[in-house]
Length: 96
Image (cartoon, rainbow, N blue to C red; front, side, top):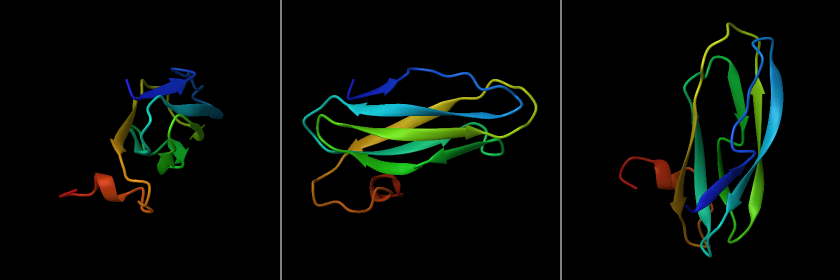
Protein backbone atom coordinates (compact mmCIF):
# COMPACT_ATOMS: atom_id res chain seq x y z
CA UNK A 1 0.00 0.00 0.00
CA UNK A 2 1.28 3.48 -0.83
CA UNK A 3 -0.24 5.29 2.18
CA UNK A 4 -0.58 4.45 5.85
CA UNK A 5 -2.69 6.29 8.38
CA UNK A 6 -1.50 6.51 11.99
CA UNK A 7 -3.42 5.76 14.08
CA UNK A 8 -5.34 3.49 11.66
CA UNK A 9 -8.76 4.39 13.09
CA UNK A 10 -10.51 6.64 15.55
CA UNK A 11 -13.58 6.99 17.71
CA UNK A 12 -15.31 10.30 18.32
CA UNK A 13 -17.99 10.91 20.97
CA UNK A 14 -21.37 12.26 19.82
CA UNK A 15 -20.66 15.29 22.04
CA UNK A 16 -17.78 16.22 19.72
CA UNK A 17 -14.00 16.03 19.77
CA UNK A 18 -10.92 16.18 17.62
CA UNK A 19 -7.94 14.07 16.66
CA UNK A 20 -4.79 14.36 14.61
CA UNK A 21 -3.71 11.59 12.25
CA UNK A 22 -0.53 11.16 10.21
CA UNK A 23 -0.77 10.38 6.51
CA UNK A 24 2.43 8.49 5.72
CA UNK A 25 3.76 8.14 2.17
CA UNK A 26 5.55 4.78 1.87
CA UNK A 27 6.66 5.35 -1.72
CA UNK A 28 9.41 7.14 -3.61
CA UNK A 29 6.77 9.21 -5.44
CA UNK A 30 5.03 12.43 -4.48
CA UNK A 31 1.34 11.84 -3.73
CA UNK A 32 -1.73 14.07 -3.70
CA UNK A 33 -4.62 13.12 -1.43
CA UNK A 34 -8.29 13.91 -0.93
CA UNK A 35 -10.26 13.11 2.25
CA UNK A 36 -13.93 12.12 1.97
CA UNK A 37 -16.41 11.39 4.76
CA UNK A 38 -19.88 9.90 4.91
CA UNK A 39 -20.99 12.69 7.28
CA UNK A 40 -20.08 16.21 6.14
CA UNK A 41 -22.61 17.70 8.58
CA UNK A 42 -20.73 16.66 11.72
CA UNK A 43 -17.07 16.50 10.65
CA UNK A 44 -14.52 19.10 9.62
CA UNK A 45 -11.29 17.92 8.02
CA UNK A 46 -8.12 19.92 7.48
CA UNK A 47 -6.68 19.71 4.93
CA UNK A 48 -9.26 18.14 2.63
CA UNK A 49 -6.72 18.14 -0.23
CA UNK A 50 -2.97 18.04 0.12
CA UNK A 51 0.38 16.57 -0.82
CA UNK A 52 2.61 14.05 0.92
CA UNK A 53 6.19 14.26 -0.26
CA UNK A 54 8.27 11.18 -1.11
CA UNK A 55 8.85 8.91 1.92
CA UNK A 56 7.39 11.57 4.20
CA UNK A 57 4.26 12.30 6.24
CA UNK A 58 1.78 15.09 6.88
CA UNK A 59 -0.82 15.70 9.58
CA UNK A 60 -4.58 15.46 9.15
CA UNK A 61 -6.89 17.15 11.68
CA UNK A 62 -10.43 15.79 12.11
CA UNK A 63 -13.00 17.65 14.23
CA UNK A 64 -16.29 15.98 15.20
CA UNK A 65 -19.08 18.46 15.94
CA UNK A 66 -21.84 17.62 18.41
CA UNK A 67 -24.59 15.52 16.85
CA UNK A 68 -26.45 12.23 17.03
CA UNK A 69 -24.29 9.10 17.30
CA UNK A 70 -23.83 7.03 14.15
CA UNK A 71 -21.23 4.99 12.33
CA UNK A 72 -19.35 7.24 9.90
CA UNK A 73 -16.64 6.48 7.37
CA UNK A 74 -13.61 8.29 6.01
CA UNK A 75 -11.87 7.52 2.72
CA UNK A 76 -8.52 8.92 1.65
CA UNK A 77 -8.06 8.87 -2.11
CA UNK A 78 -4.56 9.35 -3.46
CA UNK A 79 -2.78 9.80 -6.76
CA UNK A 80 0.84 9.96 -7.80
CA UNK A 81 1.74 13.47 -8.99
CA UNK A 82 4.82 15.11 -10.53
CA UNK A 83 7.06 17.29 -8.37
CA UNK A 84 5.94 20.43 -10.23
CA UNK A 85 2.20 19.93 -9.45
CA UNK A 86 0.91 22.81 -7.28
CA UNK A 87 -2.85 22.12 -7.22
CA UNK A 88 -3.73 19.21 -4.92
CA UNK A 89 -7.32 19.16 -6.26
CA UNK A 90 -6.29 18.70 -9.91
CA UNK A 91 -5.76 14.90 -9.88
CA UNK A 92 -9.29 14.39 -8.51
CA UNK A 93 -11.22 16.57 -10.96
CA UNK A 94 -13.27 15.06 -13.77
CA UNK A 95 -11.13 14.11 -16.73
CA UNK A 96 -7.88 14.06 -14.76
